[in-house]
Image 1 (cartoon, rainbow, N blue to C red):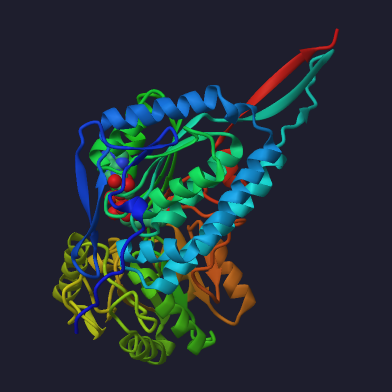
Image 2 (tube, rainbow, N blue to C red; image 1 turned 60 degrees about the vertical axis):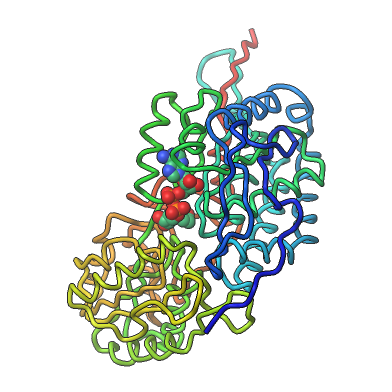
Amino acid sequence: MTTATAPALPDVLLPGRLFIDGEWQDAESTETFEVINPALAEPCTEVAEADSADVDRAVRAARAAFESGPWPDMTPRNRGRLLWALAKRLEERKKEVALVETLNNGKPLFESGIDVNMTIETFEYYAGWTTKIEGATIPVSVPGQFAYTRHEPVGVVGAIVPWNFPLNLASWKVAPALAAGCTVVLKPASETPLTALLLADVAREVGVPDGVLNVVPGGGSTAGEALVKHPGVDKIAFTGSTAVGVRIAKTAADTVKRVSLELGGKSPNIVFADADLPAAVKGAIGGIFYGKGEVCAAGSRLFVESSAHDQVVDGVAAGTAKLTVGDPLEKSTRIGAIVSEKQMETVLGYIERGKEEGATVVAGGGRADIEPGYFVEPTVFDGVTNDMTIAQEEIFGPVLATITFDDVDEAIEQANASPYGLAAAVWTSDVKKAHYVAHRLKAGTVWINTYNLYDAANPFGGYKQSGYGRDLGKYALEQYTETKSVWVNLR
Ligand code: NAD
C-alpha cells in the first residue's frame, strides 16, 4: 500500500521563519532545517533554525514587551478580549491548522481537529481568567498594619514543547502565561514547528502586541538550552521527556528560574473482572492507540484481573487488528504515521525487546506494510511481567503490555511500581473499589471507567518522575504569577 501526495502548505510556512518582536525573521546564521512529512518520509518545507543569538533577540523582545509598551498597560479585560479573539480566529482557520498538524506530525486528520478544538477551548478558558486573578487581604496580627497580596505576572516565560501535540501543548503554556500578563518565547520541537508558527500568525492577525509572543524553532540542545540558560527568562514551562526535564531543571537552577515540568509516563489501566468488560476493552484500545501511542498519558500497561483475562485480551487483540493504519488524510484511518524515522526505529526496537524478553504478541508486532512513510502496526503483548523493559520504559508508540493480577492490592502495588506517575485508569462496577484504587494510585490523573478525557478547566500533571507543576485549570495560573505581600502602616 502507498500513501498519497500531500496538499500544499499555507504560504506563511513556505519557508517558515522565526517570529520575533511581531515580525517574521530569518535566523542570524541564515541556517534552515527541513521539516519532514512522516506519512511520505519526505520534506514538506524548511524553517529558519534559531540558535542562541536568535533566542537572545526573542528574549529581549519579550522582556521589552513585558516591561514597557502596550502589554503592561493593557487592562485585564482587554487582555481577555485579545485571548478570546485569538481563539475565534483560530476557529476560523481550524481546517487549515488541523491539516498542517497532520502533515507535520502524521496523526489522522480527525485527531488534529480535536487538538485544534482543545487549543481553542484553552484560549477561551484563560480569556475568562484575566479579570479573576485576585489577591487577598491577610488578617495579620501586627497592631496597626494592613496586609494584602497581589498576584503579579512572573515575567518572561520560555515555553518548550514536544512533537506529539505540537499546537495543543503549546496552548497549555501560552494561554495561561498571557492571561497572567507574562510574555512568551515558545520553542516548538524541531520535528514539528509548523503549527506553532501558525499560532504566531494568528496572534499577529488579532493584534497581540509585538514581542508578547515569539516563536523560535530550533534544536533542543541549541535553541532550547539557550532559552533555559538565558538570564532574561524568568520561568521555563516544559513538556517533554523525563531525561530532558532533569537536564532543564539542573540548568535552570543556575539562574534560579521557576520551572514546571510535564514529563513522561507509563500509565496503568486496571481492569477488574466486575467491570463492564466491552467498555473496558474499548477503553484499553483507545487508551493506548489514540495518537499512535505517542501520548504522555497513554495507557501503556494494561492490568487485567486473571478471571477476566481471556475475554479482555481476546477483545483487545481483535479490536486492535481492526484499526486501520495508513494515510492520515484518509477518513477511515485510525493510526497515522509515527512522527519520525528515529522514533519508528525506537518503537520497533521495543517490540523486538518484548519478544526477546518472552512476552507474546497477540496483535501487530512490526512495521506496517505501507510505503514510503513511518508506519508501525498497533501491537499488543500478552504475558508481560511488570519488570520487563516494555512494562517499565516509556515506548511512546502503539505498543500495549498486558499484565495479569489476582487481587486489588497486588494491582495497586504493581501499578505504582514505576518511576512515572502521570495518569492511570480503573475499570470496575464497584464504587468503593473504584475510589479505593483511585486514592491509592500515585498519579496526577485517574480516570474511572473511562480514559483520555481532558478539559481546559481540569488540572493535568505528574507525580514522581512524571514532573511537577500543573497545566490547565486555575492551578496553572499559579505557575505564571508571583505572590507579592504588601504591608501598609495605618498608624
Ligand atoms: P524531548 O524531551 O526530546 O523534547 C521536548 C522538547 O525539549 C523539544 O522542543 C526539544 O527540542 C527540547 N529539548 C531537547 N533537549 C533540550 C535541552 N537540552 N534543553 C532545552 N530543550 C531541549 O521530548 P519529545 O521526544 O519531543 O516528546 C516526547 C516526550 O514528551 C515523552 O517522554 C512524553 O511522555 C513527553 N510528554 C509529556 C507530556 C505531559 O504532559 N506530561 C505531554 C506530551 C509529551
